[in-house]
Image 1: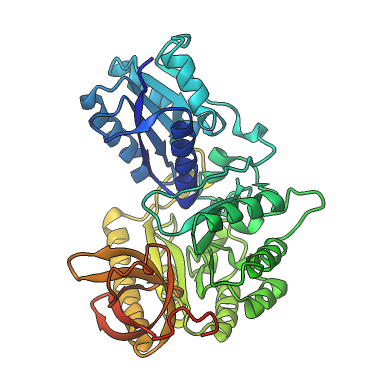
Image 2: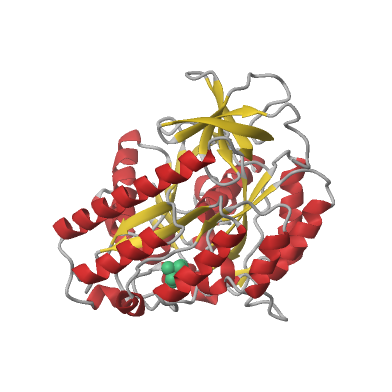
Amino acid sequence: MRKKSFFVKTLGCKVNQVESAYILEKLNQEGFFLENEDKADILILNSCAVTEKADKEVYKILKKWLRFNPQLIVLAGCYSQKFSHTAYLFAKKFNMNNFLILGHREKFRISEILKEVLEKEKLKLPLVLVGDVFQDKICEPLFIHKFFGHSRAFVKVQDGCDNFCSYCIVPNVRGKPRSVSLENVLKQIEIFINEGYEEIVLTGIHLGKWGVDLNPPKKLTDLLIEIERFLKSFNKNFHLRLSSIEVKEIDKDFLEFLKNSNFIVPHFHIPLQSGSNKILKLMNRDYTKEEYLEVLNKLYEIFPHATFGADVIVGFPGEEERDFNETYKVIKESPLNWLHIFPFSSRPGTFAESLNPKVSPGEIEKRKKILKELIKEKRQKFLEKEIGKVRRILLEYFDKNTNMWKALSENYISNFVKIGKEFYFFPGKIVKVKFKELKGDYLIGEPLKNFQNKNI
Ligand code: SF4
């Protein structure tokens, strides 16, 4: 059989990106090769279902792909795990006898399944291969070597969530919390370090639940302590970043670890969702705004120069103007300087789907705009304070338009660095710079003379 080409499109979170990188590497190993979207034999969509917008994106892409008429279209990921039947009906409507729908577990066997479909023509299409995610008891390690298009390496350490926040579909599509073992996490980190990566981003569907399913149970801090020890043994600079952590998971041990860590970077993403205790309760979030503020202030004392980011949902059912004003106040008074603002999206099968009264789309838009303005102002002030500061930054790519390197700082600031294309500068390298000026949302930095000195 002639070698087949493929293309992978990823929607959604960092975990999905890791899983796509795994699919890509696996298919490459099995003799498939990467091709552009409009020419590939096999088009694979690793989908997301977290919002209604993500659902719509799935069908927008599938309709576009129909025009390319590839040999095979594969729909995998969170959307197909939950809505395989709707996707199947779509395939029937458009006579897609080249359509394959894979669940989470099945997508990791993609090369095997593709061979059955393509070589042996054993499986009749369209076809749904989606298992019950609640039967999954372990989180298989996905060993990968390269992250195409990324200068940082994401390590998936965990899958699943059982918090059942009332608006969230994730527990239904990802199943129970499962952890990658400590040994396998360290093995993956070692692979990335050997490949030259200097920034490791720990990611999971609910990162703070790492270890709850292990025997004996462990905490994320236990994992972090071991990773810290492991990184130290290389005697060089690394950035260790956490993708997102819930406020209730930031306890004394975790704070103690942060204080003493050589590698953890000053960037914390701590979902807020709402600043109204009434709405937090309806959301089934297990903290109050007072607890949220207390934890953020503790972190701020240790890391006054950190980026503090949060997810916020505007227009949750029952969110009155005074609830929204409370959210506004919490954001204003907290150290938050970065926000992901989500308009409420009703997800089938969640408790929030049945909650009333709904907030009108016009009001949601208005509230979103107000928060956007607030955070823009706060971010600007934060960036201005960074001028003159020395920070470690990670080079991303050389930008021909500015003749500078585009980079991301330890404290999560996009910046440009005035250095050339010398051989010792390459994507993924950590360099120390002094921020000199602010241009729009970007800081401009210059490298220190001893930019490689580990002790600066
Ligand atoms: S913690 Fe809540 S919002 Fe986050 S994945 Fe779990 S259920 Fe969804």
